[in-house]
Length: 450
Image (cartoon, rainbow, N blue to C red; front, side, top):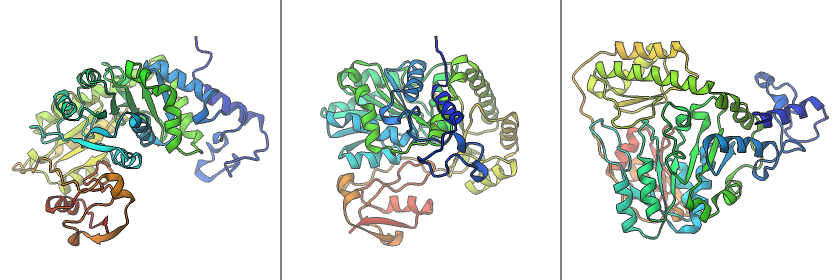
């Protein structure tokens, strides 16, 4: 029996009611602060009774215990630094196990930067392209072949769901990884709600060892609210991942985490425990499925295979629609997508979308004109690696126009956000194919090695 489902809020509210003179950070002292005046009284720091994120033993520890129970993990830990902090911590936890990480090429840029700082060497698992004109998930067979070729690998790292909502076979990957004695790391930043969908497809439920959730992306949580999950598996117990998780997060995380962000995760707990949030998610899933069926009937391509049930991805090139035309149609319908590619668009739906929001998407799908289908170039080009990411990131650099960059070596992750997936990794040679992609995305100058 839980005495409270909002332990952190209760603690901070108690401090607020004491009305002590605040001779501590933050500098606003809880006083009115423009449009933020409604929340500043609860914006505290690590004073007596408020606990401390990376040394939690009070209300923050209790909030984490409730999430651990909810997700059925060995340990679930709050992050006020988004999934970026959780990704950094996951890679730090497996660093002692080896230098190589077998990692899907669609990894977020934060993973690449963390590997460079930690001296980890990426061995890329490159996705294919499906008939849906979208990247295909990394398969267990791909992972097994890579593990056979790299017996010294420390871990396998995949992104699931990917940016288009495709789900990887986590159970199959976990079986392969555990047979080879390596942990499976999953960037589940876009799939926190999978724990609460009608069919639980959360990576922790399917056997992953380490996983990050960006609660703020798809749950009603303030931006930056995320969670690091440690699975209850033989490998996590063998390597002490729960014991070392906080130290790994502390290595990269701010010593001034936002209490407002943590409070937003804490005050979500009652809805997660009483089932009301599950009902909201189930409603969203039904609305998205209706829109998918409508879009398929209108000639759109939809992602193949298992997908995040709250994500609506529409491949619109079969309708003969250009990116500019689809963008204008979104504006006319009054919708702002998560991501618009040259041939596809991603709509991130959550339990907080209104009925009106779904009706606007319906209008967009119904009213888009049909023309001659457009030809779309697909496939993946893997650039030549010149040096390790760490060497490239820490080496002297210079900035050059894109027109002068051919043959040069990238000195940093080059990406657009969204989606934050690198087009070029540090240490890779910039060839004509890569330069054409960068130009298409409006990236007109790059940092290269001197």
